[in-house]
Amino acid sequence: MDKTLEEMLVEQCAPTLAGVKPANLFRCPDHAALYHSVQEWDNRLRASGIRIRVVKRCRRTHACLIYVCRWDWICRTLAQADTAEFLRTNGYDLSKGTESVLCQLSRRLCLQEDFPHEIGVFLGYPLHDVIGFIENRGQNYSCCGHWKCYGDADRAQRTFDVYKRCTAVYKRMYRRGVPLMKLVVAA
Image: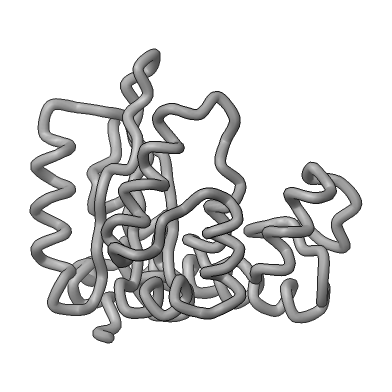
């Protein structure tokens, strides 16, 4: 049985829904009602400060990448001087705001042959780990979980553990009948 978008949001985005992670990205099989479901959930979640959008649709498999974020958190992250400089250095035009930057990321996901590894900053990964991943081509990391860490492995592991516990709790609560909207922590 195919999972609903709601089930995937709980399974893939619990830390973002809980307010402990700025964003998540997950793959979703395309189906006739997907774009309508994404729009519907975006409308429902906006009051809690969460946005959801399709950022890529694969031409070959028709699967979609769904991006879910805490809007204000992402805006603050992209406005940080070091992050903004990193993105500018990587060809992003930040002058038109967060919405424009996310459109630029979506274009890169769709048009570039290589995966744009700067996406880590859009998912809340520490900037030094994103840079470390790019410079080391994914090798020589100190630990690996939700991302490859090139800095403080203990801190990263604690964060991974928080995400894992959060996801387990949210999945359990959802299976027990708690509606997704009751699981969302408002901004």
